[in-house]
Image (cartoon, rainbow, N blue to C red):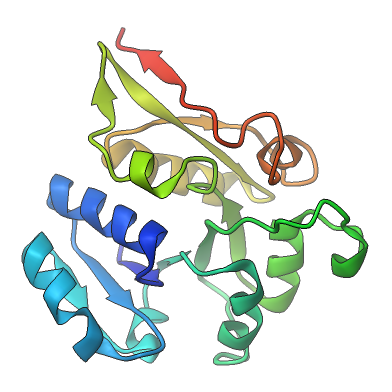
Length: 196
């Protein structure tokens, strides 16, 4: 499976750090171009590769580590997202869902990406905590996963585990994903799952 991170802010950098820590190859892109990412990639090592946005969107699993509103411009770069698993790591910060049609934010993102399987994860921890070594105090940092496709949930949970975290799948976005909304009960929760 190929992976790409779109966004090089604090969340994108935190996730790139985790990929590098585990020696998992990942492409990283932003709107400023790969030249702007050379210093970051050099600091993390050879498994993190700066690419163009177009190249990043060829990956099988694409992590959107961009502000929520930025997904719409990104969505217009492809007419068909079939075969892609897209991880929505953003947070829609308005408590009123009317501006996004009353949908959960990841379902709203999914509507803009026809054919993609969108999974909500990596949004519940502050970037500084997301960048830390996930193993601590005899356990692993918990990361929650929610999406409308069981196969994509399982695929993303496997990635979460490979990055050293303890994944907990919550089910569909309109069910368990509600818990991952901004100011929801599972956002900003620093939970550790004890090692067996």
